[in-house]
Length: 284
Image (tube, rainbow, N blue to C red; front, top):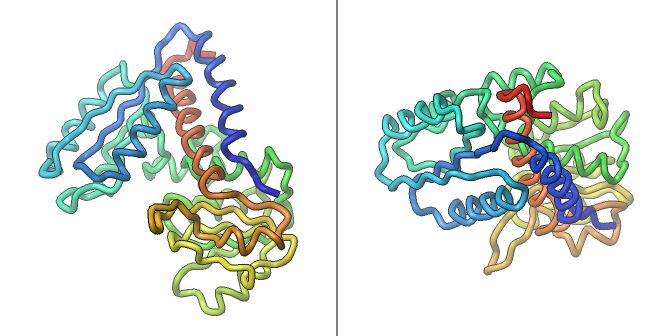
């Protein structure tokens, strides 16, 4: 059975639109885009459109490829101090002359919609209920919840150890929380016998960034497969899972596109709203 992130994201955004329409305060998310990377430009356009659909204002700031690290950090500092800006998103990747870690450290944690600042990461890891959770991991949790896929006591295997998806998901799913309490194995490119480990998973989450990497030989019959990957192959978008190969043997699977991707954007909007709510105590 397909897990439709597209449908669930639509439901989340409709509810969020209703909440925002009742608010007296405007909500603004600032997008910072450095350079002319086509995928980054496309992602920002999608996020801008989603903001508009729910009533969140967006401010897009486009900078040239040759922008210096100092210039970008100065801009972020100005956005941090601007009370009209509720959230800041710096689109990655950045040009080579800019240290991404410094950029993440400079964003005010109270405006960090991605949840990447070490302060917010620490809150998430320690199980703080008010932590801003990175958008893709949060989207995965919401998908599991919506489809009532039990995680308690299950063996979850996460393929990929990025700070954006793999590591946060492994931590969240192992926490003592709703849609947590799982036994989690985190595997990566240096893991030995990776295929056999994956086949032991009740829930297999692919976030390795390699197109069609997961085949049915790596999946236990009846397992749940969550495909986080977005890869372009011959002008076609595919995931990290060979969907047509794996679909026949699993109980649930997320398609690409239309699975985790729409939920990532929906959770970006949700995080923006939550940050605005904290900044304006009168928001309800």
